[in-house]
Amino acid sequence: MTDLSPRGAPGSAPVVEHFAEALVPTPHGEFLAHVYITADGEQHIACVMGDVEDPPAPLVRVHSECLTGDVLRSLRCDCGAQLDHAMAAIASEGRGALLYMRGQEGRGIGIGHKIRAYALQEHGLDTVEANAAQGLPVDGRVYDAAAAILADLGLRGVRLLTNNPAKCEGLAGCGIEVVERVAIEIDAGPENLRDLQTKRFKLGHTLSD
Figure 1: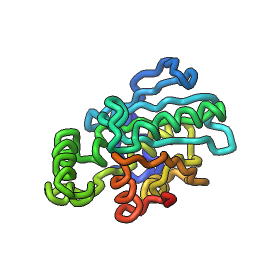
Figure 2: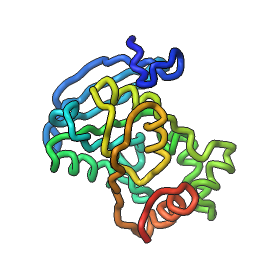
Figure 3: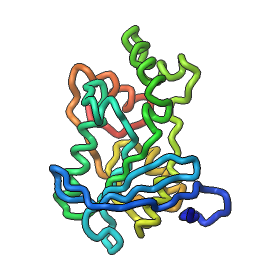
């Protein structure tokens, strides 16, 4: 295991190990997939296209695992559509990286509590209220592992595909410069409108009307 903390402070960031890499063909083109393991055993994947080490700063998406949105294509959230959009945007530029962060389902509450949150939403609560009703944090994600992976890939500055200013701040706090925030807005529908409104008004996401 190698300490890849971009902050360099002993014990201040997780240890990550570069475990494997292989080419993965996708509908958006061929990516070189790197698997990283953190000290707690979580496995994350970084899908890289082109040369990302040389300037200018490449397009990067740090995507939290969302089984319901990414795999089941649930319309309750915009996660699956954001994942597709990010890969297409990176492919359009011919270079960039998509980090798929495992263990961050439901902003860190896990799939079981997320489905319970869905049930609470069916009785009128929004996503923030549903987490609070279960005694869970609104957003339990940290960005140390993502920053360490980006550092191992040779990145210190990124153009980050996100609507979430907290994600920019989290990476910056771990030594990764966000030189530009690139919006990744998905059209609202009847199933995800309230979720997007909650992100905008309660979680501070930068979203248009």
